Length: 338
Image (tube, rainbow, N blue to C red; front, side):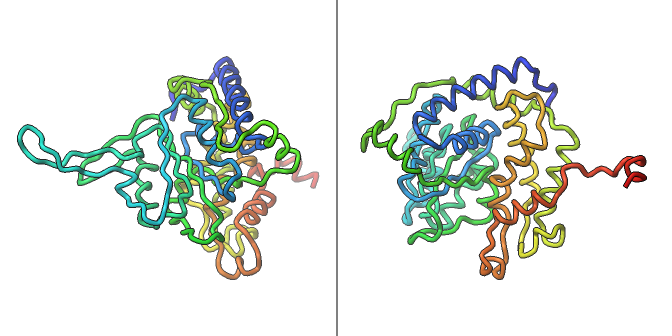
């Protein structure tokens, strides 16, 4: 709970900062305006983002551009089948200290502001799970000692579609810790022509710093101060509840619905989106616009539904169509009119 809510002046200034960030990232990744807005929304909401798409669509370039625009320290981990958990969190190393030999912790690449987990689903499930504590608690424990990660800290992970050879599905517990799962679509011919004209193979696009890390953290704090009306919170709760079997017609064929973390995630993302659009309060529109990226990866279908060709995205869209925005009884005069 915040002590005070965001003011119109603060939201207007934040909206201008976001517009500058969008402009910088649009010069990195052509034709992906909606994807860029969702990624920014995710990091402003202090969430982790999972990007899925075929190789070569610009997922890694987007993450690199974001780190440069925000002036954050960045580490990249290329996930491979032989990657070990200690390669991410760090390892104890035997060293001589004051004439004695003892284990000294050597921090791994997770000790950074922005961790790029590239092709995360090419590593084994054991290694993937090494990120769990870091993503949720923003700290890691090695040999019984807890080490706090820098602030801000968030993970932007990329993965290839699971149909590709050599991929391992992410554990459900880890998938739930990603605020968004976003699909990176292929570029149309017009965008490809622009890429060919303005890009060179092997040359990274130049991105100037738009915000300082301190300014970005103020942006995150301002998002938490956005007012969430009770009716919007009730709508979010009913959307998440409708993902469970028996709670809605759309949930037919669902094995497991979204967790309470999904409701908190959708509320945080809705407030971040409201800030990005210069509004001091979240709305039903914010919740509806972000329901798919928040809930898509948290709804698991049973075998029969998958065999019928249904997807989690189909279920979320059906829930949005089924669940009414308002959950209030009609006034007595309207009831009599009906």
